Length: 244
Length: 109
Image (cartoon, rainbow over the protein chains, first blue to last red):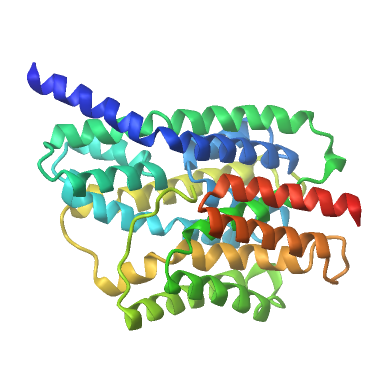
Protein backbone atom coordinates (compact mmCIF):
# COMPACT_ATOMS: atom_id res chain seq x y z
CA UNK A 1 0.00 0.00 0.00
CA UNK A 2 2.80 2.36 0.91
CA UNK A 3 4.60 1.46 -2.32
CA UNK A 4 1.48 2.12 -4.39
CA UNK A 5 1.11 5.46 -2.66
CA UNK A 6 4.68 6.52 -3.33
CA UNK A 7 4.27 5.47 -6.97
CA UNK A 8 1.22 7.66 -7.24
CA UNK A 9 3.17 10.54 -5.70
CA UNK A 10 6.03 9.98 -8.17
CA UNK A 11 3.56 9.91 -11.07
CA UNK A 12 2.01 13.25 -10.18
CA UNK A 13 5.39 14.77 -9.42
CA UNK A 14 6.45 13.80 -12.94
CA UNK A 15 3.31 15.35 -14.38
CA UNK A 16 3.93 18.56 -12.45
CA UNK A 17 7.63 18.77 -13.33
CA UNK A 18 6.88 18.33 -17.04
CA UNK A 19 3.96 20.78 -16.87
CA UNK A 20 5.76 23.80 -18.34
CA UNK A 21 6.48 21.79 -21.51
CA UNK A 22 2.80 22.06 -22.40
CA UNK A 23 4.03 25.36 -23.84
CA UNK A 24 6.29 23.43 -26.22
CA UNK A 25 4.09 20.45 -27.10
CA UNK A 26 0.94 22.54 -27.61
CA UNK A 27 2.18 25.21 -30.03
CA UNK A 28 4.44 22.84 -31.98
CA UNK A 29 1.71 20.22 -32.31
CA UNK A 30 -0.64 22.93 -33.57
CA UNK A 31 2.05 24.25 -35.92
CA UNK A 32 2.58 20.80 -37.40
CA UNK A 33 -1.17 20.34 -37.80
CA UNK A 34 -1.56 23.68 -39.56
CA UNK A 35 1.37 23.37 -41.98
CA UNK A 36 0.74 19.69 -42.72
CA UNK A 37 -2.86 20.30 -43.70
CA UNK A 38 -1.82 23.43 -45.63
CA UNK A 39 0.68 21.23 -47.49
CA UNK A 40 -2.20 19.02 -48.60
CA UNK A 41 -2.25 16.09 -46.14
CA UNK A 42 -5.72 14.96 -45.07
CA UNK A 43 -6.77 14.82 -41.42
CA UNK A 44 -6.02 11.09 -41.04
CA UNK A 45 -2.53 11.53 -42.49
CA UNK A 46 -1.74 14.53 -40.28
CA UNK A 47 -2.88 12.60 -37.20
CA UNK A 48 -1.05 9.50 -38.42
CA UNK A 49 2.20 11.43 -38.33
CA UNK A 50 1.68 12.77 -34.80
CA UNK A 51 0.43 9.48 -33.32
CA UNK A 52 2.76 7.03 -35.08
CA UNK A 53 5.96 9.11 -35.19
CA UNK A 54 5.59 11.57 -32.22
CA UNK A 55 8.67 13.56 -33.20
CA UNK A 56 7.95 17.11 -34.30
CA UNK A 57 11.30 17.91 -35.87
CA UNK A 58 11.36 14.69 -37.91
CA UNK A 59 7.73 15.15 -38.95
CA UNK A 60 8.41 18.69 -40.16
CA UNK A 61 11.56 17.46 -41.93
CA UNK A 62 9.55 14.83 -43.81
CA UNK A 63 6.86 17.36 -44.63
CA UNK A 64 9.33 19.95 -45.91
CA UNK A 65 11.11 17.41 -48.15
CA UNK A 66 7.83 15.97 -49.45
CA UNK A 67 6.72 19.50 -50.36
CA UNK A 68 10.10 19.95 -52.13
CA UNK A 69 9.31 16.75 -54.11
CA UNK A 70 12.41 14.96 -52.82
CA UNK A 71 12.54 11.18 -53.45
CA UNK A 72 10.91 9.01 -50.75
CA UNK A 73 14.26 7.55 -49.71
CA UNK A 74 15.74 11.01 -49.08
CA UNK A 75 12.60 11.98 -47.11
CA UNK A 76 12.95 8.89 -44.90
CA UNK A 77 16.71 8.95 -44.38
CA UNK A 78 16.71 12.65 -43.51
CA UNK A 79 13.83 12.39 -41.05
CA UNK A 80 15.38 9.28 -39.46
CA UNK A 81 18.71 11.10 -39.18
CA UNK A 82 16.99 13.89 -37.23
CA UNK A 83 15.75 11.22 -34.79
CA UNK A 84 19.10 9.49 -34.26
CA UNK A 85 19.65 11.52 -31.10
CA UNK A 86 16.95 9.35 -29.53
CA UNK A 87 19.32 6.37 -29.58
CA UNK A 88 21.31 8.39 -27.07
CA UNK A 89 18.18 8.95 -24.94
CA UNK A 90 17.42 5.23 -25.09
CA UNK A 91 20.97 4.38 -24.01
CA UNK A 92 20.95 6.86 -21.17
CA UNK A 93 17.60 5.64 -19.80
CA UNK A 94 18.76 2.01 -19.89
CA UNK A 95 20.72 2.07 -16.59
CA UNK A 96 17.67 3.58 -14.83
CA UNK A 97 14.82 1.61 -16.41
CA UNK A 98 16.58 -1.39 -17.99
CA UNK A 99 15.24 -3.81 -15.33
CA UNK A 100 11.59 -2.94 -15.97
CA UNK A 101 9.31 -5.49 -17.65
CA UNK A 102 9.45 -5.71 -21.42
CA UNK A 103 6.00 -4.17 -21.99
CA UNK A 104 6.87 -1.31 -19.66
CA UNK A 105 10.10 -0.60 -21.52
CA UNK A 106 8.18 -0.87 -24.80
CA UNK A 107 5.71 1.76 -23.60
CA UNK A 108 8.51 4.03 -22.30
CA UNK A 109 10.19 3.76 -25.73
CA UNK A 110 7.01 4.89 -27.50
CA UNK A 111 6.83 8.06 -25.37
CA UNK A 112 10.57 8.72 -25.13
CA UNK A 113 10.63 12.23 -26.60
CA UNK A 114 12.95 15.19 -25.89
CA UNK A 115 10.93 16.56 -22.99
CA UNK A 116 9.92 13.35 -21.19
CA UNK A 117 13.51 12.12 -21.48
CA UNK A 118 15.13 15.34 -20.29
CA UNK A 119 12.83 15.82 -17.28
CA UNK A 120 13.06 12.16 -16.21
CA UNK A 121 16.79 11.61 -16.60
CA UNK A 122 17.57 14.77 -14.63
CA UNK A 123 15.32 13.51 -11.84
CA UNK A 124 16.93 10.04 -11.81
CA UNK A 125 20.38 11.58 -11.54
CA UNK A 126 19.17 13.90 -8.80
CA UNK A 127 17.52 11.18 -6.72
CA UNK A 128 19.39 7.89 -7.27
CA UNK A 129 17.52 6.31 -4.33
CA UNK A 130 14.22 6.18 -6.30
CA UNK A 131 12.87 2.63 -6.71
CA UNK A 132 12.33 1.16 -10.16
CA UNK A 133 8.54 1.44 -9.85
CA UNK A 134 8.85 5.07 -8.72
CA UNK A 135 11.08 5.82 -11.70
CA UNK A 136 8.56 4.26 -14.09
CA UNK A 137 5.67 6.10 -12.44
CA UNK A 138 7.63 9.35 -12.67
CA UNK A 139 8.37 8.81 -16.38
CA UNK A 140 4.72 8.07 -17.19
CA UNK A 141 3.81 11.16 -15.17
CA UNK A 142 6.01 13.35 -17.38
CA UNK A 143 4.11 12.02 -20.40
CA UNK A 144 0.78 13.41 -19.14
CA UNK A 145 1.27 17.08 -20.05
CA UNK A 146 3.21 16.24 -23.23
CA UNK A 147 1.93 13.28 -25.29
CA UNK A 148 -1.88 13.86 -25.15
CA UNK A 149 -1.33 17.62 -25.59
CA UNK A 150 0.87 16.96 -28.62
CA UNK A 151 -1.82 14.80 -30.24
CA UNK A 152 -4.78 17.06 -29.42
CA UNK A 153 -2.87 20.18 -30.52
CA UNK A 154 -2.06 18.50 -33.85
CA UNK A 155 -5.76 17.81 -34.33
CA UNK A 156 -6.75 21.40 -33.53
CA UNK A 157 -3.99 22.68 -35.83
CA UNK A 158 -5.12 20.41 -38.65
CA UNK A 159 -8.71 21.67 -38.41
CA UNK A 160 -7.42 25.24 -38.26
CA UNK A 161 -5.18 24.63 -41.28
CA UNK A 162 -8.12 23.46 -43.36
CA UNK A 163 -9.92 26.74 -42.67
CA UNK A 164 -6.91 28.99 -43.43
CA UNK A 165 -7.02 30.21 -47.05
CA UNK A 166 -4.11 28.70 -48.99
CA UNK A 167 -3.00 32.08 -50.36
CA UNK A 168 -1.87 33.19 -46.89
CA UNK A 169 1.40 31.42 -47.58
CA UNK A 170 2.39 30.42 -44.06
CA UNK A 171 4.82 27.79 -45.36
CA UNK A 172 7.77 29.86 -44.20
CA UNK A 173 6.63 29.14 -40.64
CA UNK A 174 8.30 25.71 -40.99
CA UNK A 175 11.90 26.92 -41.42
CA UNK A 176 11.24 29.55 -38.76
CA UNK A 177 10.05 26.83 -36.36
CA UNK A 178 13.20 24.77 -37.01
CA UNK A 179 15.48 27.71 -36.34
CA UNK A 180 13.49 28.54 -33.22
CA UNK A 181 14.06 24.97 -31.98
CA UNK A 182 17.76 24.94 -32.81
CA UNK A 183 18.76 28.32 -31.33
CA UNK A 184 18.05 27.47 -27.66
CA UNK A 185 20.01 24.23 -28.18
CA UNK A 186 23.20 26.16 -29.01
CA UNK A 187 24.50 25.60 -25.50
CA UNK A 188 28.21 25.12 -26.14
CA UNK A 189 30.87 26.19 -28.66
CA UNK A 190 30.60 22.69 -30.16
CA UNK A 191 26.85 23.14 -30.81
CA UNK A 192 27.49 26.54 -32.40
CA UNK A 193 30.28 25.08 -34.56
CA UNK A 194 28.05 22.20 -35.68
CA UNK A 195 25.22 24.58 -36.60
CA UNK A 196 27.57 26.93 -38.48
CA UNK A 197 29.12 24.00 -40.36
CA UNK A 198 25.62 22.80 -41.18
CA UNK A 199 24.71 26.12 -42.83
CA UNK A 200 28.02 26.40 -44.73
CA UNK A 201 27.93 22.79 -45.99
CA UNK A 202 24.28 23.19 -47.02
CA UNK A 203 25.29 26.17 -49.19
CA UNK A 204 28.22 24.24 -50.69
CA UNK A 205 26.01 21.21 -51.47
CA UNK A 206 23.00 23.27 -52.59
CA UNK A 207 23.59 22.36 -56.23
CA UNK A 208 22.95 18.64 -55.71
CA UNK A 209 19.57 17.40 -57.00
CA UNK A 210 16.75 15.88 -54.88
CA UNK A 211 17.96 17.60 -51.67
CA UNK A 212 20.75 15.03 -51.57
CA UNK A 213 23.08 17.66 -50.09
CA UNK A 214 21.28 17.44 -46.75
CA UNK A 215 22.83 14.15 -45.65
CA UNK A 216 26.52 14.95 -46.34
CA UNK A 217 25.96 18.42 -44.83
CA UNK A 218 24.39 16.91 -41.71
CA UNK A 219 27.04 14.22 -41.29
CA UNK A 220 29.84 16.74 -41.87
CA UNK A 221 28.35 19.08 -39.26
CA UNK A 222 28.04 16.21 -36.73
CA UNK A 223 31.72 15.46 -37.21
CA UNK A 224 32.58 19.14 -36.70
CA UNK A 225 30.52 19.28 -33.49
CA UNK A 226 32.04 16.06 -32.13
CA UNK A 227 35.56 17.18 -32.99
CA UNK A 228 35.17 20.60 -31.36
CA UNK A 229 33.78 18.90 -28.25
CA UNK A 230 36.67 16.43 -28.15
CA UNK A 231 39.23 19.23 -28.35
CA UNK A 232 37.50 21.39 -25.77
CA UNK A 233 36.56 18.55 -23.44
CA UNK A 234 33.02 19.94 -23.15
CA UNK A 235 30.48 17.91 -21.19
CA UNK A 236 27.01 16.99 -22.34
CA UNK A 237 24.02 18.41 -20.51
CA UNK A 238 20.57 17.05 -21.40
CA UNK A 239 18.35 19.43 -23.36
CA UNK A 240 16.17 21.66 -21.23
CA UNK A 241 13.35 21.24 -23.69
CA UNK A 242 14.14 23.48 -26.66
CA UNK A 243 13.04 21.25 -29.52
CA UNK A 244 10.64 18.41 -29.73
CA UNK B 1 -0.54 16.40 -51.43
CA UNK B 2 0.87 17.26 -54.84
CA UNK B 3 3.15 14.56 -56.26
CA UNK B 4 2.33 11.94 -53.59
CA UNK B 5 -0.38 9.29 -53.62
CA UNK B 6 -2.23 8.37 -50.45
CA UNK B 7 -0.44 5.02 -50.30
CA UNK B 8 2.97 6.68 -50.65
CA UNK B 9 2.20 9.13 -47.85
CA UNK B 10 1.12 6.29 -45.54
CA UNK B 11 4.22 4.32 -46.48
CA UNK B 12 6.34 7.30 -45.37
CA UNK B 13 4.36 7.71 -42.12
CA UNK B 14 4.55 4.02 -41.18
CA UNK B 15 8.22 3.56 -42.17
CA UNK B 16 9.23 6.68 -40.26
CA UNK B 17 7.16 5.56 -37.28
CA UNK B 18 8.70 2.07 -37.23
CA UNK B 19 12.26 3.38 -37.64
CA UNK B 20 11.76 6.02 -34.94
CA UNK B 21 10.31 3.46 -32.56
CA UNK B 22 13.23 1.12 -33.24
CA UNK B 23 15.66 3.93 -32.36
CA UNK B 24 13.78 4.73 -29.13
CA UNK B 25 13.51 1.07 -28.13
CA UNK B 26 17.05 0.08 -29.14
CA UNK B 27 19.16 0.31 -26.01
CA UNK B 28 16.39 0.39 -23.47
CA UNK B 29 14.68 -2.64 -24.96
CA UNK B 30 17.47 -4.87 -26.19
CA UNK B 31 20.86 -4.03 -24.89
CA UNK B 32 20.06 -3.01 -21.34
CA UNK B 33 22.94 -1.56 -19.40
CA UNK B 34 25.64 -1.74 -22.03
CA UNK B 35 27.05 1.71 -22.71
CA UNK B 36 27.50 3.33 -26.09
CA UNK B 37 31.09 4.08 -27.09
CA UNK B 38 32.09 7.67 -26.35
CA UNK B 39 32.87 8.58 -29.94
CA UNK B 40 29.37 7.52 -31.04
CA UNK B 41 27.64 9.44 -28.23
CA UNK B 42 29.72 12.45 -29.14
CA UNK B 43 28.37 12.38 -32.69
CA UNK B 44 24.74 11.54 -31.83
CA UNK B 45 24.61 14.52 -29.49
CA UNK B 46 24.88 16.90 -32.45
CA UNK B 47 22.30 15.35 -34.80
CA UNK B 48 19.60 18.06 -34.38
CA UNK B 49 21.91 21.09 -34.55
CA UNK B 50 23.83 19.50 -37.45
CA UNK B 51 20.85 18.57 -39.62
CA UNK B 52 18.11 21.13 -39.02
CA UNK B 53 20.11 24.25 -40.09
CA UNK B 54 21.15 22.48 -43.31
CA UNK B 55 17.52 21.55 -43.93
CA UNK B 56 16.29 25.15 -43.83
CA UNK B 57 19.27 27.08 -45.22
CA UNK B 58 18.37 26.79 -48.94
CA UNK B 59 14.74 27.84 -48.26
CA UNK B 60 15.92 30.89 -46.30
CA UNK B 61 18.54 32.02 -48.85
CA UNK B 62 16.71 31.13 -52.05
CA UNK B 63 13.00 30.97 -51.18
CA UNK B 64 10.45 29.58 -53.61
CA UNK B 65 9.24 32.14 -56.12
CA UNK B 66 12.24 34.44 -55.70
CA UNK B 67 14.02 33.00 -58.79
CA UNK B 68 17.20 32.30 -56.88
CA UNK B 69 17.75 35.82 -55.54
CA UNK B 70 18.04 36.75 -51.85
CA UNK B 71 14.87 37.89 -50.07
CA UNK B 72 15.16 40.34 -47.17
CA UNK B 73 12.02 39.24 -45.24
CA UNK B 74 13.12 35.59 -45.28
CA UNK B 75 16.69 36.28 -44.17
CA UNK B 76 15.83 38.86 -41.52
CA UNK B 77 12.98 36.85 -39.97
CA UNK B 78 15.24 33.77 -39.85
CA UNK B 79 17.89 35.80 -38.03
CA UNK B 80 15.25 37.18 -35.65
CA UNK B 81 14.13 33.61 -34.77
CA UNK B 82 17.73 32.51 -34.13
CA UNK B 83 18.57 35.63 -32.09
CA UNK B 84 15.47 35.47 -29.90
CA UNK B 85 15.86 31.71 -29.43
CA UNK B 86 19.50 32.02 -28.45
CA UNK B 87 18.94 34.98 -26.18
CA UNK B 88 15.77 33.87 -24.38
CA UNK B 89 16.33 30.07 -24.65
CA UNK B 90 12.67 29.75 -25.54
CA UNK B 91 11.67 28.05 -28.80
CA UNK B 92 8.04 29.14 -28.77
CA UNK B 93 8.92 32.80 -28.20
CA UNK B 94 11.51 32.55 -30.98
CA UNK B 95 9.01 31.03 -33.44
CA UNK B 96 6.41 33.70 -32.69
CA UNK B 97 9.01 36.49 -33.06
CA UNK B 98 10.25 35.05 -36.36
CA UNK B 99 6.79 34.66 -37.85
CA UNK B 100 5.75 38.17 -36.75
CA UNK B 101 8.95 39.62 -38.25
CA UNK B 102 8.23 37.79 -41.51
CA UNK B 103 4.65 39.00 -41.72
CA UNK B 104 5.65 42.58 -40.82
CA UNK B 105 8.49 42.73 -43.38
CA UNK B 106 6.30 41.16 -46.07
CA UNK B 107 3.65 43.81 -45.45
CA UNK B 108 6.08 46.74 -45.26
CA UNK B 109 8.41 45.89 -48.15
